[in-house]
Image (cartoon, rainbow, N blue to C red; front, side):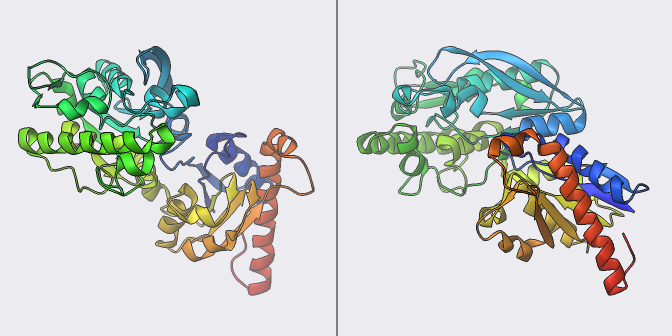
Length: 385
């Protein structure tokens, strides 16, 4: 029999690849002859870089870039094993976690470092990009990223704008003649799981500005600046980004990718599952095992286990979830393709103990799940596992 093992990282505990390996050990205890295909997955957020790199046999590279407030920071990006795809999480170059609460400043924060990371990947020969844009400290619509790649954003006197979203209020002209030609010939898939437009009451500044340190007055200032940005982009680049779903993601970075790099905004889960070729790997599978740190009612919203389950269900393949814990209304997942779910803990234990023993707990829980399948085969007269 063929078993596809497609778990997500158990955050703070064990990587997706190690979860898949532990699941494999559990399967083989019950079905020694099983063919196990390890397919670690992610949803475009935290852990996506490691999951895609580890799963493809690639490597993680370090680059020093401009941080969100101008200082230098060390960031990582991933080179997938295909030798053509780079994986970048903008939170590592321009993220909120890089700043203390006191230093958050969405008026000045820049995505310039993200552009520098993209440039290094271009220098290394990569022409296909998967970019996760969650966790940003910025509200500059990707202006800094564009500047790092050679775009000039000019005021009415022909001077280059300084970093930050507030400066976009003075934007008069966009000159893309200096845009790195390698970026023009590259493909950018942007993991974007929000639908906010660029401006307005549901836009980038109003919805996400406060968590980045914006006061009500700053929200109004930033929203007007993004409105100006949209006007000039439409006039100079012929691209209307203001009302595009997802353009407001990451302080307008979603719109910046569309405007400057012809980026495609897609569900993070779909980007990852397509990148790892899940559809092909499901061919001939008898059962799929997925999971995450905590399976609950939130799992149904663009989380990797549901993406896996829905693709498996469309092919008539049963799906079992083995997760760190089962949370509130975890049964909601049964309506989305996960046929059965199990938690890895067998007895009361602390979170620290569960994390320390995660691999063996995953193995044991998977073993028990497959033993139950054997019982089901005997009881209901179906082919045994």
